[in-house]
Amino acid sequence: MRAALAAVLFISLLAQAAPARSQDAPLNSSQSSPSHTAASDKDRVDASEVAQFLLGGALGLGLHESGHVIAGAALGANPGVKGIRYGFIPFFAITHDPVSPAREYTISSAGFWVQSMTSEWLLTRRPALRDERAPMAKGVLAFDVLASAVYGVAGLAHIGPPERDTRSMAAALRVNEAWVGAAVMAPAIFDTWRYVRPDAKFPRWASRVSKAALVLLVIRAAQ
Image (cartoon, rainbow, N blue to C red; front, side, top):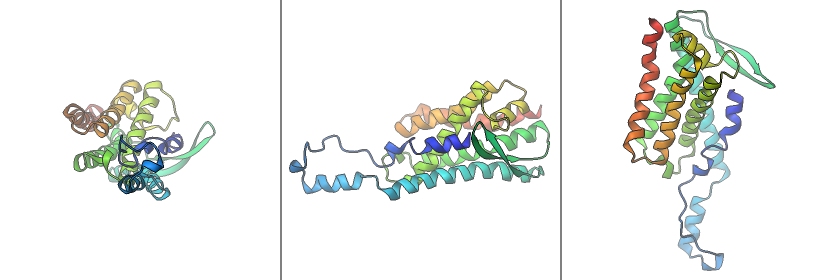
């Protein structure tokens, strides 16, 4: 699943990897003024920015997986790594010893908790991120949004490898995985909305509530 996520990472938000272009660009090069030419050069996405965007996505993946490892280690679950395969796609999964439902939920959802913190930090500190030339930050945000969306779809449709996070979270909560899929997808929807419309208040607070809910569900797992 993470390999499929990496495959679409380049496409998502790539159009936003540079600031929005002016809508009154000249019709042809003969009409271009030096200021128009300078603006065009500034808005062009070069290979360096693409590389930084992808590096940001890789950083997002590393932070997500680090969340599982740190939570597993903190709860004495001996986290490890094992190779997995979904169809023809090989990848890896973070493993840990059997634990109580509350600890299982914490470890399985820790990757999303880290995503929530990083995306919230980015969108709060830099609400106009869409208009900035910040490819690495946009790459991190793109991963956070895509990971939540992909896992959300997997949870709603009950698809993906058995090791998927939403399945483990649902087992710990003793609920249908579709509910977990919806809960995981909500931050992706609201954060995308915030990215496009930074002045809108509803998605800002809806995003924060949905992220807090993912953490507070540990109370349900402990019951």
